[in-house]
Structures are given as structure tokens and as C-alpha cells.
Length: 301
Image (cartoon, rainbow, N blue to C red; front, side, top):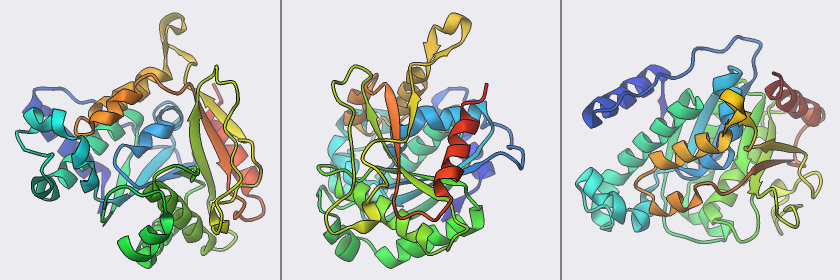
């Protein structure tokens, strides 16, 4: 299911009016020469991982950014206790969550998306069935993997994207994140040579003794990267506003704050100075140059 920009604005404005808040509109349309970027994530709130870079591209530079969300987000009921007074619902009850939480989390996602400039949304509504680090069961039993790959393929073809952003499928991370990234790579591969460059992202602290590295997952060639070290970095500490006293970490915090049904997300406030990006090995010739062009375009003053 695709939700248009007009409907997004309507939903957000309605929510804002009901809450007594004024919500800023989405950014104006990008020029045709500006790049198009697709975010593929497993859960509402996963987009926080690269929110600084997305804001830079969409709000400041005018890129067209869309998001494909794989699951319905119901599994987040475990962390919804603090949001129960806000929504007037016992969201930590699985039965109540199944009925109400998907719509709530989509509304939170779109409210955060309005901040960072996401224009359109594609909801695949696959089951969000608890936590596992194993993508095998997700791809073969929990999700309809063929459906997800087909939908992502269609979205990529119709959107003519230059770049696809995913979570880096690192060991020790959620199996849903790994599965969404693997399926995004597979979907892009099926489009042939004229397809978007697909990258994986992770965050790090500027003072970390060692930057994270990643080369791939056992048994999943789709998850391999072309080199262990990241190729691109976006520094959230870059100065904004008068005298550079503001920065992109504020934008990330604002987006996180919109996900009120997810209490654990709020613990990520101010964490992560750097957004790091890897190129997947399973990209066509010229993908490095295509991705480089987008990152270099985003860095223009």
C-alpha cells in the first residue's frame, strides 16, 4: 500500500490539530535533476539510523525520499507502556496492540518523516512477530519473502531511485533488520544493470576506539559488502544555525521523540555522532560511482 504525500500531510495535520499542535508541512518538490532515495526498513522507527543524512538530502537539498516499511510494527507492544496514557489504550496488551498499534506506529512514522522530509510511504504489513537474530525463519516462515521482494522490486522500478538505504545486517542485530536488507538487495538485483545503488548503514561515536567493520553474513551472499570499512560518513555534529550552535543530532532527537509508543527508542537520544555507509557487493558496475555522486551532491553547500 502506498500513501501519497497529500494524504500524509492530511493525516499529520489532523493529528496535530487533535493534539493542539502546529505541524510543519513537508518540503516542496525536488527538481528533476535531484536524486531519488528509497529507505527500506523493517520497523517504524528504524529510519532514525540515518535521519541526519536523510534530513540533509531531503529538507536542505531537495532530494525525493520515500520509505518502504516491511512489518506492521505490532511487536513493539512490549515497549509501549509509557504511551498508554497518551493514546488512552492498553497498548502493552497483545490483543489491544494487534488492533491499534499498527496505525499508531504509522502515524508516528509519518510525523517523524515530516521532520526529515520523507515524501511517500509504502506499507508491506508483514508480521512483526517477536525478536530473533536469525533471518532464516523470517524469510521462509514469518514473512512472505516473495511478496516483499516483488513489492520492493515494483517500488524501485516505479520510483527510478538512485540510492537505497538499509540497515547494515550485522551479526547480533534483529533478524527483521537483516531480512529487510537482504530482500532489498535481492529486489534491486532483479532490475538488471539500470538499478539503484544499495547501501547499508550503521552508527558510531566519534570517540569510539575502533570504527565498526562489516564484510557479510554466513550463508547470505546478498549481505556481503565490497569492503570491510565504510565508504561514506555523515557527521551529525555538523554545525547548523546561528554560529553553528545547533546540529543534526537535534533533528535525530526530534524524530526519535515522535515514536512515543516505543519507550526504548527514547534511550537512543544523543547517541551516535556518525552515520556510516557501506556499499553492498551485489551491486552492478557503476554502483560505486552512482552512490558517490549522491553523497557528493548531499555535501554541496
